[in-house]
Length: 329
Image (cartoon, rainbow, N blue to C red):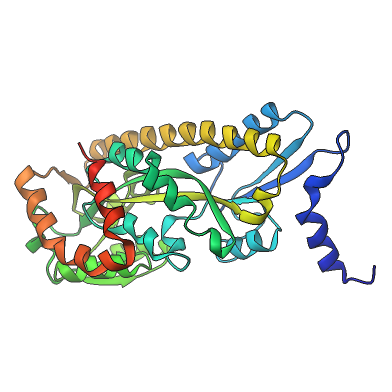
């Protein structure tokens, strides 16, 4: 009874699901850092709609977009403290919890987004969602951003030798550092918000990103060539607090699981449609040339990247890499 207010609040939040039937619905907070009109934002709203429909009167899902509740740097801590119940960070954010997640940064592992889907829905892909449970986190779903393409301020971008000596902006990732070093290029870690100006001023020569990110951020306006490489994937993982999830009543957990599965299919379809549309918009703008690659070109890129796979195979696990490769058709 003499507990500090903050501890009392945390205790109450952690055990909110024990409220008797007929009381107020359980409040579930879903926090994310992007706008509502994005596939992630729409996926979160769809989850709210479906969860409340499947569990009428039992749950109330509150969605907080645009870092309204917690910013990118604080949301994981907030989830572990029980201040929020769902977040959806980029997959690259999880390598500090398990090195296995670096699988998704391996270059030219997946042929296309359909192969990514097949792996993520496979036994090994689903197993990976649970690989961070020992750190208090539980993955529930993968949500797409899209496949990565490569762009530069050069006229030619067909083979690995075309990027030798160039500077590329990357996300913070050991695999991505190794990827560009294997090509003889210079990786530069940089915040997403700084990329346009860096490309415009020549601080970096190129970058890698999804069609939707390149269109929304206008990267195509300050690059000469975009190679349609599909060499990597930028995705999110929807995660929850493992202890909170395991403590839910079975019917609530079942309803939320079903809502998440349906919201995932919805968000991923939106992401695929957005990338296809934005690719066309970039092509129609006529500012950056879209370079299509032949099978021989792709084979050359794959060969150049072989050292990266070997370097990280021990941390990721050969079994996971093999399972991912089997998803290609």
